[in-house]
Image 1 (cartoon, rainbow, N blue to C red):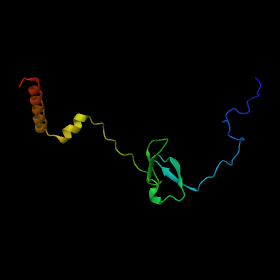
Image 2: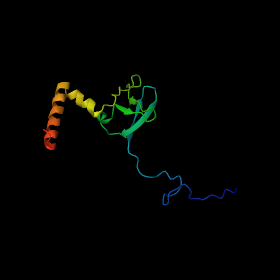
Image 3: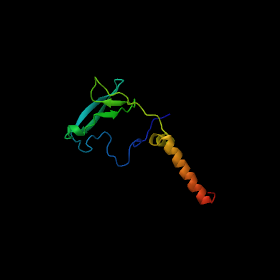
Image 4: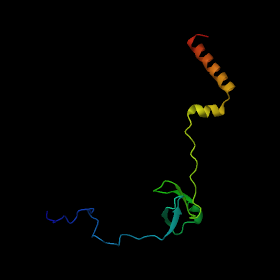
Length: 118
């Protein structure tokens, strides 16, 4: 098979000469390293003039999914996930059994009145 090739394969139309490095101005930035509990490092870049309090202390590590912090010696631990709660579980947290029984009786009374069975 001959390797004639297509000169513009893999490039965008109007992208300019291949290898041109003069595509705009790069603003000053600062690199911040984050480590997860497994020791994996990821680097995030922020604007150089950004105040320190606006740079996040923790992020989610893109490969492991674990929380990653700026302190290599003490990376953040994984927060305990709360189990999924149903709507009924939330209602039971707010109401006692006696309140639930009273509400059910009131609702049944109203339903029977509407149907003419009271």
